[in-house]
Image 1 (tube, rainbow, N blue to C red):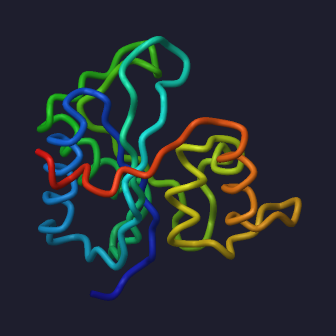
Image 2 (image 1 turned 60 degrees about the vertical axis):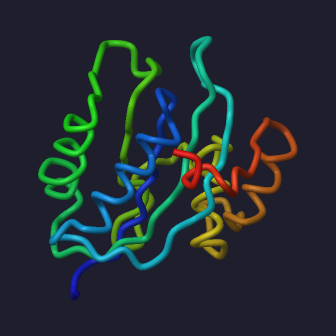
Length: 160
């Protein structure tokens, strides 16, 4: 498939093994996406509220859609189909969350350099990405992983 390269971050903390696997499978089958690479699955504590741990992973996908169309036509409908309810609390627990982190080489979420649950999975796929300050993403991920809890979950998707 021709198109732009996008990096997506997937996450769940409500039945995370089940919902992450269902979301991943739906994205693999979507006719507007070609999944090129997948990161490992990582477990980290919820941020901004007391709640269950999150499972997160990153995907590199190729798509003919713009970043906005990818979000509106693919990701938001998929979240809704998996029971995601958006509330005023952006940190609320969720069945499934999918965000475009990088699109066509441009970082769309600057938190990538500050949040371990973003940096570690994305660094598996794009380790040489460089911040505006000159830090490689693999170095940022290592720095954040030493400061904040995150744990590799190699069998997370197999346990559903």
